[in-house]
Length: 423
Ligand code: MEV
Image (cartoon, rainbow, N blue to C red; front, side):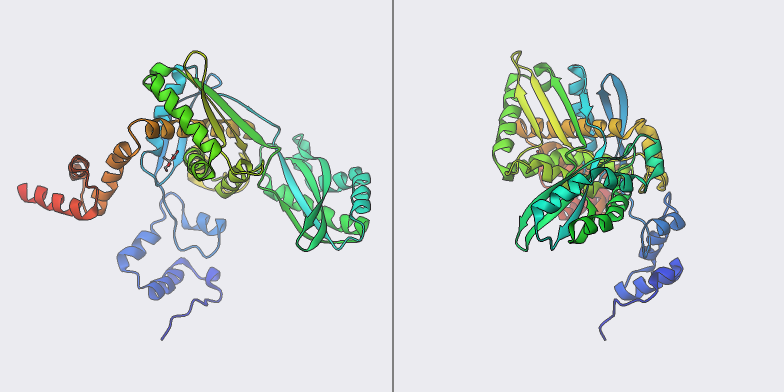
């Protein structure tokens, strides 16, 4: 008989009963159930309050990117990622950047955009004027929703409206500009957008559907830049290679997607470790990369007149020190303590610097020896573990596979067998 996925009241069941259902449905072993039950540093009751229908936690390795010097301040960067070589590469690049004086950064005020979609308007131009004439009243209504944010100097600061021609006719989009201070801001902005909707319907005679934050946070940008001495990179030919790589990404969306992914490898690892919303950052970065009508790179590298390498990155940075899982997740709290940033702006700037470092590491490797050598030696350890190697055997099996350039589970098993026989 086919199994059903309809489980009414699943969320009300205690963990044991939830696991019994999953065990039965998926045929999990007792050992697999034990792994799920062992939630370690994220206790079940905390996880259970974070999301729905919890049956376990999903641990990722948490590492630290070293060598970061940003605006003259030293940082250790907590990074959560499943990808080998990302954390090592960040520290390696940060070391080279340090030789050139470290990273420099800037950011705009932490302003997020809330969008309210109004449809069914007879005269969109007239409606737009009516909305803009009522700006003060609408902003006041928005600010009435969040006294705490106001008390910290944040809140709705401005608004605008635009007429969109869509496949379903014209619509009026009202945008609230909300200074979120040290919060990521989704809750504050969405609450405000929902609160002003009835007023907007009244003013325009239209109907409001969507009231939601935009992840294309063009008013909340972080920027980082650096100069890397050619000697630190291994000579002017490497500088040329990175500049060519950058020009390639700027010109070609297929390359830009991978180039940007390389920068996001670092950024997302930190965002994840600190319990922030990494999907928001990822969506914002890619949309920003396409903002001028063609998808391109979010960073740029050029050779300067001394033959050294100049790099710059800029992207939307909707991250917070409060809200979401930042304060509830015990490891995120520790990650935040390690990061030691005092404001969401400082946090965003550090993230931009990490992205630039990660991008540099990838381009340096790609434009010289290629990434497979370094990548494979780390990947080989994963494969050795998958093949059953333990303790000292992991490195022995990995080294042999790299030497043979055969990093595969079947080969790892053979090597492991041979080594075990010799013992
Ligand atoms: C792999 O995770 C990231 C890279 O592909 C980035 C890049 O190509 O620039 C190495």
